[in-house]
Image 1 (tube, one colour):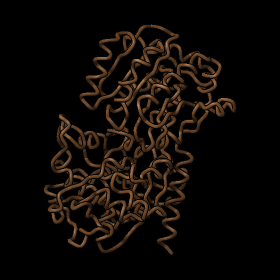
Image 2 (cartoon, one colour):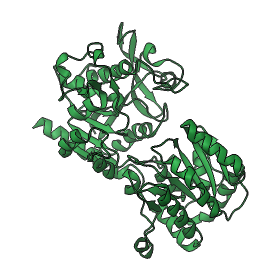
Image 3 (cartoon, one colour):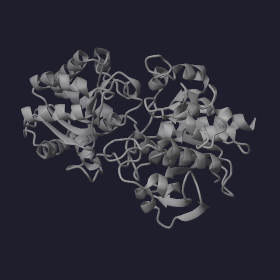
Image 4 (cartoon, one colour):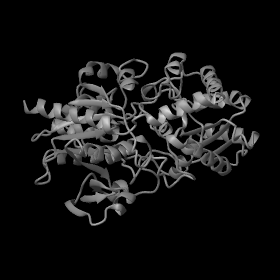
Length: 485
């Protein structure tokens, strides 16, 4: 069967390189689309970890000078993914993370680094490699935003262009004097091109010049068209509303499967939820919490940031403690928030404990052992941790925003009466409402039959990529048909 070729352009891809949910999506969507008749090849920067994983890679192209230094385009497979890798050591081989140094300072040449990614993505879309002609180039977030600009201002073959926004807060704005260095014509620096409040806007360019725009949940698609949620881009997005759609993310249900997860203490499924008790005991021991099987154990797996609403949780800790609950937190980020939670843990040993950083195996153990997962985000494009929580029987307690709204059914009186609740929602996103949600969760936990029903409801939810892959397939096919017509 001949598959339709799609080129995905992303700055990170799980399991090779990851800082957030973008990597999870870029890593999982290609496999989900195979069943829909598509062959996805992902273009990713040649970070050291990525190049090391590319065993038996072929050098498809070589460049003597590509954005300031020699580079190669590698083609091959790694971690089950078909990849192109832009191996440009002067751009991507350096200590620290993909976007910043070890101290969290963004690399000063990020404009050049990710323009290079977009440039090679557009060139591949235009037929740079003999025998490879993708029908659609699908760019992810600001780091790939210039892909559509190069496709627009170049002459030659023009595949369909799709832009996915994973988080509108990160936009990629750079000095307009870089226009020539980035290989863009003067004509591109207009309101209808890459210009954005006097700068070069990478994300703005992708949103303005792509044929289709997607974001990662239906509610977030509506929120970003408002002045409150649009972060300066709402006017553009409202003007392109007929090209914008919200397609909910999924998770890899093979990786996140409590019945077969090798990272947790005791496997379980919806028919054997009593086995979760061993995971709770192991989690309490790992965090140094009191070994109390009856205490309501809340957990957080998150970046520590204002966006994630964790300052509100700090303010709500007295209520959590008053309910006799415990808290296990895994995350890193804002130094003030980290200090605040560290101080709370020191003041309440056995009740509050923190692991600062990110640890994927520990995240699995938390999902398997926690009773409830707190996600009090002020805005959340989609969110993946609440989907993992549903899968593992950890009841999600979430703000009523973005993808959290789309994935969790609140335990309202009507939903409880109908037997359909899967979690607790709250809004507006302020500390008193979070405190109320914590109290509601504690009341529900003290009703074991109701709690068990919520757990099994959550575990029955389809959080896979199956439905979302169908929607992406429809979007691709519609765009291909439109361009052919």
